[in-house]
Image (cartoon, rainbow, N blue to C red; front, side, top):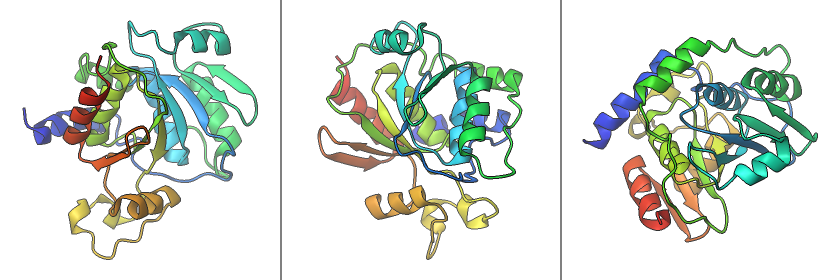
Length: 246
């Protein structure tokens, strides 16, 4: 199956979720330390949290917890007392939370711009989105743990980034997620990357990505363990499997 076809199929969950997790509306304060989220790409409850992180334009350290995985289960138990996901740890406030609605309510209360309110969860639509992806990103595969977490520039609704996040989840690879949601109300944000002339990124993370990689396109993976930095979801997936599969 071609990567374009895979991405087209991967777009369906974003359409089901009515485009949530595509636009970054910003936040009133930036966490001094990155938020920590234990989650699974396949999980409908976790999706709601990831959408909120994109809309609030917040980075987070992601610790994938696929089914039958064990890499982060001990730490998760130590932090929260149970192995369920999603689980948020905010080292800036000491807050530790399970339950997607509680997590999203906290994120908006603590970090959202004035006037922003947490969106409705629409859980049934999130469940449909999960069904559309089948078992992609759901079950752990044997892998080698990286010495340092990887970095991924992504936003929740991106069909190409979703393919990479599923692979990261299956391999239980921790990564620092840099959310690069689209700027609100800007038509240029929805144009294909190659057609944007004199593109001026509207958010800090988008500016950082353009400076770091040379263009604004997702996904973009940086592996500090090997010095590799790359675009293109298919290439990234092949790299992850070749480098970290056990």
